[in-house]
Length: 507
Image (cartoon, rainbow, N blue to C red):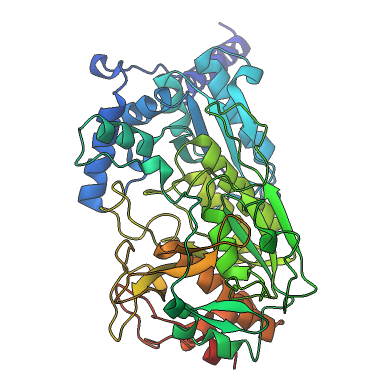
């Protein structure tokens, strides 16, 4: 046989073997006992087992059968974070982003035996991530073998909703409804002991005096600083967070309302339901952080001259499922891209990590934003958790609530732990009353508690500090807040640096 022909045959054989051995071409065999997906109850049981033994759960540690089972039980949606390394999450810093994306999509279309238009749900413009539709376990296995995969997660598996269904059916200890957590339109007349009237006729909440905020106002009111709040939106019925945002001593500032939440069970739906709060939680957070120092006899916010940008990103505080997690991701990236925003506050979370939200927070953090997140407020579904996601991320500042008193004691529903950075006194020792806020409705008041209000309060204090020192960096502002806290320079394993003295922080 001529040497030329022999060489060609040898080259063909080598290329053929290489093709057959590549991750996206080799035969994948699924064991017989893993060809049927687990039920939602079985999936949750495995997640709970991991959290009970390790204290946390991450889909990276799940085997492909568990992962596929959650995908099948979640509208077949998969979120893929990709990149050249684990830290490579930003498209602008990834020259081969489109090439990697196309390579992963080719694996999906091959194993799913489908076309690109049926496989790709969305591709994020800022982050190295895509949402796709996958039905086969083989596809997931092939993708996980790619060196470009940072994470691969079920994009619409609702862990909390499954727990809720179990409790409703009597599997759990009670019948509390987790999906309504944090919502309510109630109004309540404030007890006289829970506020002090300040000019021009505003109510300064009792908790502000615990943190020396009224004295801090003699130095700084937050002017020139913009706070971004990611929550359930703002009530259209509360004019102090709308047309009268500049009432009383609050002047020359702006409020911008945005909506990125899609109220649909279908991940492919893209029409948002607007900017208005349909829960009540977001209104309370906006109030405690930035409500005007008004002349209407209603509660004032911490940074009453700061600007506010709000995002309706979720239905309630428990970020369960595709649309809420997608909304929060969009809000963080949008605020990251907003050069006017310096502070981001989010009093919502989840019991374990969500890759796309992690990416979005890192994106915003990379833009210099100071990010505050709630350490967690207990429902029947989260009592087992310590500091919740994303408050435990190194890019965020975790805040929780404590009771009034000389010694530290967590509020009745507040989470504590080593990831906590600051505390806010937000529950009265005797009455149990929490923080006065402007209600969902015009000319009405309410109380709000938990780590949620503690977080928004701390974001307001940060605005006071940054307004006093407008040329400081995020790290300088945070350092000053730590130095002004009650436990500094020590850090408690449960309560972080403790309660911030706002007056000291603006010196």
